Length: 296
Image (cartoon, rainbow, N blue to C red; front, side, top):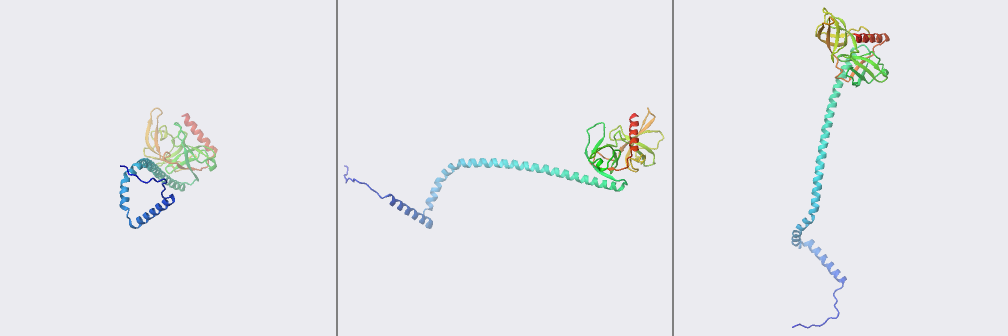
C-alpha cells in the first residue's frame, strides 16, 4: 500500500555560498587535525599502496624512454672515452718519439760543436731540407745558401768526417753531393804511412774507391783514409773512410781499394759546411778532375 505524503511545491536546499563555506571549514579542520594528530596516516598509507601499481603503470613509458636515453648516452660516453684514450696514446707515442728524436739531434749537435771547435776554418751549421729522388746521384739539399757564405766546392762534414761537397747554391739553399757520389773526388792519404791517393765515389752504393793501385802499393784492409789537404778545398786531417778490401783488376793491371765512409749522412740532419777559400782555379781543377774521371 503506497504511503501518501504531503506534496512540496517548492524544493530548495542550502545556497552555493553556504556549501562553499562549509566545505572550506571542513577542509581546514581536516588539515589541522592531520597536521597535529596524524589521524589519517593509516588511510593515506592504504591509499598509497593501492595506487602504487597504477602509478608505475602510468610512468612505465617515461621510464622506458629514460632507460633507452641513458643506455644511448652511456654507449656514446664509452665510445668517446675510448676515442679520447686512443688519441691520448697516439699523442703520447708521438711526444715520446719526438723527445727521443730531439735528444738524438741534441747529442749530434753537441758532437758537431766539438768538431767546430777542433777545425780551424770557420763553418756554418746546416740542416737537411730534403733528399732529391734520384737513383743515380747521392745529393742532399740544405737550408742555407750563398746568403750564409756558402759557395760551390766547400766541404760538408759531420762528427765522423767528410760527408761530401757543395756543388750548387742559391741564395737560401745549397745542394751537396755526398762522398759516395761519382762527382766527388777527394785527395786523401793513408793515416798509417802517409801514402797519398785519391778517393772517388764508388760504383758500389755507400762506398768510396781508391783506384789505379799498383801491386807494390802499401795499403791494406783496415787502413784509415784522411784528407791530405792537397788542392786546398778539403782541409788536411779530416777522416774520410776505412779500407775494407783490395780487389785486383786483371784487365787493367791495377787494383781498387774499396772503403766505407766514416761519416753517416743517412743518420743525421745537421752538418757543418766549412767556409774554405774557394778560388776559381780550384773549381776549374775540380771540374777537370770530374771530366777526366768521367772520361776514364
